[in-house]
Length: 502
Image 1 (cartoon, rainbow, N blue to C red):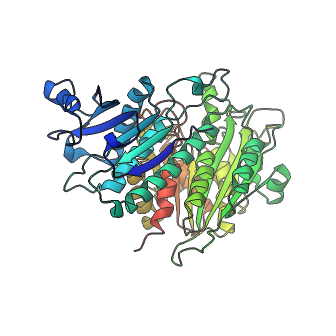
Image 2 (image 1 turned 90 degrees about the vertical axis):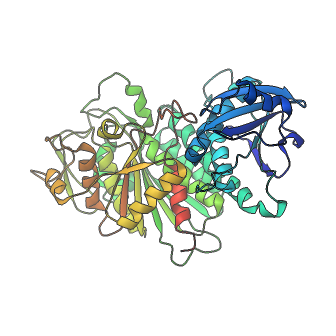
Image 3 (image 1 turned 45 degrees about the vertical axis):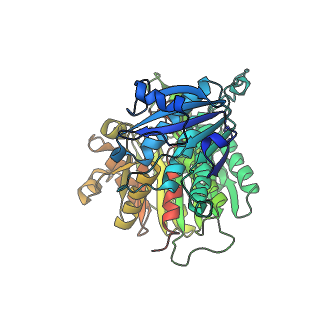
């Protein structure tokens, strides 16, 4: 399970808290707060401490450790830089066995968009995400170490006690979103022999059982075939593991905002992808346990939305199966029929994610979703194009695309929009069926995949997020290796955008 940390806010001076370590951020041209002991201020004057971004210096005074953290240029201060600074500081704090860490909130740039609530939220997210460890299968748990962080305090001594409501609310929201992202990372990191499609379905049921406003149900192979989901069913033909069509429904207890649409989140959850008959190369095939990252993000984002009690309805659809070769697996050249009646030539069984998503998108639409967003580790082409910095975004609706872009900027899970154009439709037309899941002409691979999916959303505003480059090994200080939980916080921010006053 994700490591839980007790988080709180205070208007006390950091020295007055019971934290054993205090982190103080210093930007170029800045100086430590007046409440900082002289021994700490001396670190800057001596040159031992620097304001360069991510630089660290440690001192002892007044019975505490004091950690000076460089923030770089004041005008460049952003929520993402604060997440990285918090993660960097946590690494040093863990080295000195910190149990209770207090962050002294740095001043925001006078002309910048960041206030105390946004700065506080970023510090919490960076710390909680960086504190994640996956030791489910280790005989010696990381919790045996003396470096386990137990408490995080965000201190803003300049704020009046009556004016900390916004900061406290932002911190609470950030904590829930970060814990949900870590929950998704736990699912991603589990191996395929442990996290089967049925196990993922069971996980969805268990988390829903603990939240009154959230329900979860799952159907297996028979249910998928009964719903005429021929594309999804074809992918599941090669495995002996039971596939799972997982449906989540969140209905706020106090009712939704009248103008808010019903959100539909759809996640690809291939719990292991060998490529099927179109077998992948053996090198690094173990990483294909991460091919369920979109489903993990959808599940945990809806959990976070329910915990936050956001006044908006959300339906989630997760298509979970393995993609394996066998004597009864779907073959290149086979033709299948999706649930909306579209026929598809399966010319490459390793382009399986779009087959699963096709039926899941159509199903989410039938459940009443008025805005559709799917997340999937869909193409290697997006990694070539965007690396791990951006996820690829394609959308048929300008407002939805803009909301997702802004949500990504707030969460640090940034997206880069790729075009959809009528000419791309020509590339996905089939020779013997309506569509081809893997055109021979290897052009615009990521866009072609998104174009394929656009055939299953009807006239519902829809966006596709290809997260293949950002789902794992993200390379950021708070998620350097392994699962990243990418997309959870973005989806939460997207849902929140519909709940804000216009």
